Image 1 (cartoon, rainbow, N blue to C red):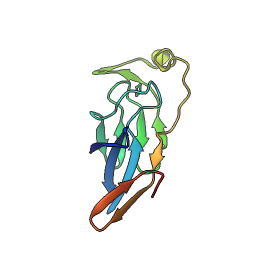
Image 2 (cartoon, rainbow, N blue to C red):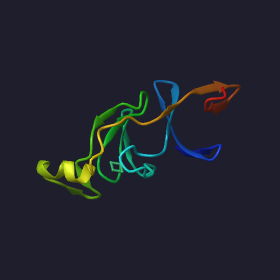
Image 3 (cartoon, protein in one colour):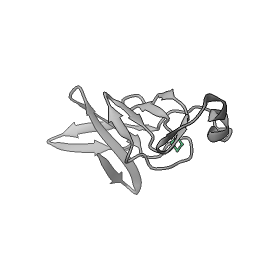
Image 4 (cartoon, protein in one colour):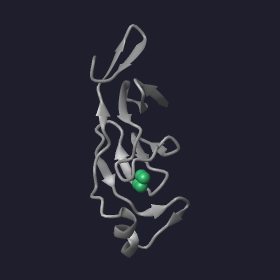
Amino acid sequence: MAVEVAGERVLLTRREGRIYAVVNRCPHMGLKMTKGKLREGVIECPWHGSRFDMCTGANLDWVHRLPFMPLPAWSHKLIAMGKKPAPLTTLPVQERDGQVLVGAAI
Ligand code: FES
């Protein structure tokens, strides 16, 4: 689920009963990942295919395709544009009285 928290775009997911939040900005180019595929706690960026663990933010696979088109391995560094693999920014989350609280102030 994509939401906005204090002006920041955030993605929320529930995994094994717990809610996790990450900033909705891919560390590759800062683009929104709202339309990324989410499968078993892993989100794939819709732009260049980087994959991230939604619970920890860890990068699992770095840039390797264009939208709707895989690319040969030799081109991956070109598409990365000099950016090194980086994690998503995670945010603290609490569930309290049926509400989800997100951000550094909790
Ligand atoms: S913007 Fe996400 S992988 Fe490029």
